[in-house]
Length: 337
Ligand code: 13P
Image (cartoon, rainbow, N blue to C red; front, side):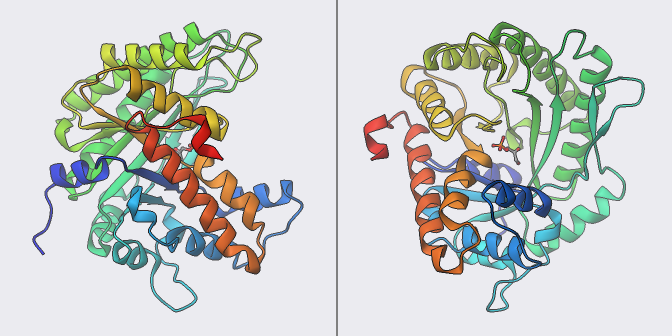
């Protein structure tokens, strides 16, 4: 089969009624979530969880690609097949999240930046040779009384653009994720302002770094009220303000926006996506790239119990199906039954 161009990979990722499964959390996150469910993880639990997710029957009906943590690309299934090959064989594009995580931004109390640009060119070459087709880099912007600062916004935008340029150089489609976080007491209006600011700076930096926008996807936060804000915006307001901020700041040259769920409930993440697709005509595809809002239900069903693998897979399939419907504005709460 002929190798796909970067633009073709980007288009495949946003195929109609499909989205992305973000499974790039490090193993310690899985351990912590299992502890909350009163279950303990063993050495092999992370590998088994990835295998459960990636071998879910017919997941590719609703999932175009899966983002993996670097520690997962060298893991194999019980049968000895590499997880990367399992995704390809099951009709999905394997992706990678090569950042080494968030670290404090020097001189900027309370603000963070993602590390991991060292040797990224060489790591990307290895990932490309394995058949990895896309990558994702997350910047985390926090809202507080005196933050975000322009220093933090600019530093994060610059790193996102360096990552994207290196990814395209290696023949891997970049997904840039300039996330304005949900944590805090801030209003939805403050989230809107910070999101507009960060998106505009990110696209300026992408331009300066000569990144091909037609071969880039944006992983955006939705514009929402802070998790601890006493007034929570309605589904319609979130949809309206999110579409508005994207129209102001996201060029129509990018093929798609794939949202993060950011700590929203499973149903809110689906309902917001649905409202944006049902009620607005947009120049980009709007679909999902959820981690928690896709993995919470299957993890609850599985709980590291080998007899519950099929229940976990059924729960993942259901959430992927619901979000696929939301990506074309055809979801309704009654379909959840
Ligand atoms: P959430 O959907 O849990 O916010 O995670 C998104 C993400 O970026 C993980 O790759």
